[in-house]
Image (spheres, rainbow, N blue to C red):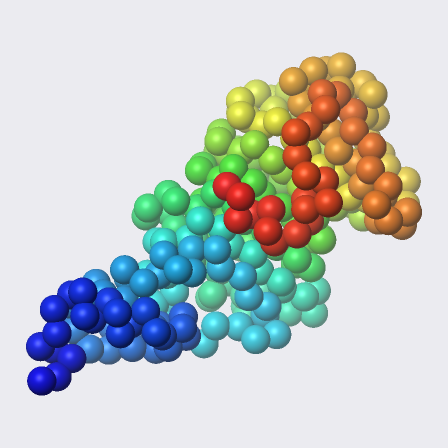
Length: 242
């Protein structure tokens, strides 16, 4: 008897012993039936996080297959990592996620956003609930592009490092496209350019949570109080709750 003779239940029991890299290494390498069995295992890795220090070494087709099963994706990039090393991994994951529209949370750490980042993330923004760019270099006009079709977004997390002014992405024509948005978290270094008292009046349904990265754990909320575990806001576990 060989693996090809096993019924689906027996095959599932065997594949359940394999980790993600092992499953991806044999995906598209044996037969369509094995591909189906491997995809049944991908639900175990639906909350996927990785660092570009140790990026996944798999081709686009395998990453796209994994992307179809993702609920949350958390990528620690690193400011020194260039776009051409990230996009070939990020794009197929987002393409797969766009097929099934299961992805709810997307988080980046230490990424320097470019136009190609924006175009790639736009594949999944229509069904995201959480977009966290709290440790990223991202500009006002990029945030506007990301929010253009994010009509299911509930939580937006950004980092102000002098480049952001809020002049564009907090304007009414942008905010009107975000009917589900409940919370904007702003992490900042230096002086905060936002006039949050005025914004909380202009958008009374929104909560603005401000986090001073210098005075650690110094939170302040403008607008309605939020029913959220502040201590877990920046923790990967937060993305597993959706």
